Amino acid sequence: MNKSEQINYWLRSGNESWDAAIVLMHAGKFVESLFFFCLSIQKYIKANWVLDNIDQYPPRIHDLQSLYSQTDLELAPELVDFLDTVNRWNIEGRYPDYRFSLHKLATEKYVDHHYQ
Image (cartoon, rainbow, N blue to C red; front, side, top):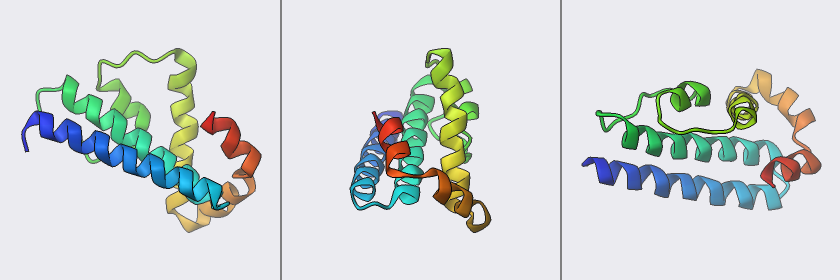
């Protein structure tokens, strides 16, 4: 894939993950919804990574702040801080020992607040 195709891939994949997060949210699957929101944000950042870097393949990492720091994106400081919160959804959504703490946090109110 060329650079343009890579960017389109990440954007399309990010949109699919975002749509899945919405479906999961409406189904009351809040932990899974947060995981897919995190996944979609990661893919959007990776699209920007491809745009802003010479290489066309982003690193195989999940840390949003690390990926963000390798782009030319300029987010407000509070949004950069929020990436840490979103990273937590990834870790706690993937690993069963952390997943239970996310179940306590991932209420409908919490998901609705962050979805807005």
